[in-house]
Image (cartoon, helix red, strand yellow):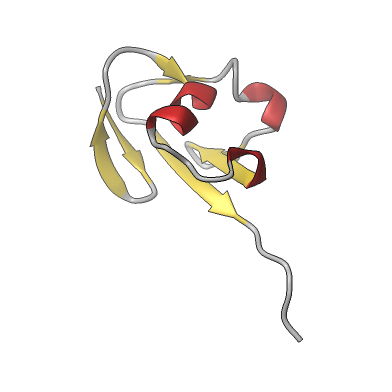
Length: 68
């Protein structure tokens, strides 16, 4: 199936969850990432339940603190 991850087309095998997508995409610090799935920010509790389907758009968002 084809989906869009962070603006890039990605081809993946079979159905998978957001949690599995984080592993497949080798996301660094998955505990620190927020996920937007088809325009909706997901609660972390949804990662194991939310299925990714062909044509979906997923964004991995990292929020950094700091500055002056």
